Image 1 (cartoon, rainbow, N blue to C red):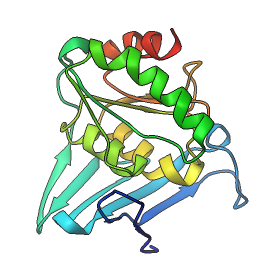
Image 2 (image 1 turned 180 degrees about the vertical axis):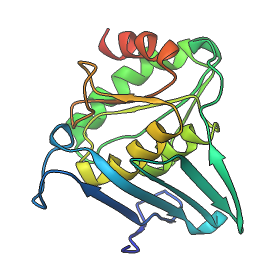
Image 3 (image 1 turned 135 degrees about the vertical axis):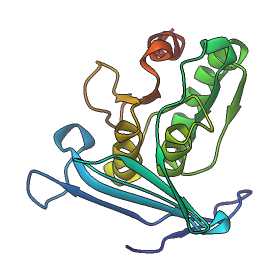
Length: 185
């Protein structure tokens, strides 16, 4: 695992090594063309490690204590704590901000951690109810995607298939359709 510190302007430093495998060869592929087979995300500030394999459950270790991750019960979208992220390009951020103006009045609140992998793990751990973002690369989402799915959540793209750079949605299936309708309105 490579330790990749991220220090962006105005953001807390986070380190989140990501490990993932893919079934179809070793070359770079868009997220739509592969399935992660193993993933791990580490948040050293809180000593949290999240991990999963394609044939096992999702796990979390906090300060030496391990527990299996299971999706939290569904809540109404209006009561949901939703997380998202913002791209680096100004035109992408502008579009993402416009989406946020439609989403924010119809949910409980919004969160942003700065790492797609960590956001997905927080949804898997039940700390947040849903996550959405566009503009992600395969390495941004692969580990968290697997962890969220193995915890019992739905992770999908715009057309209901695998997530890709166009859109990633994660959460309980009961609220994803309503969230996607707000995003696409």
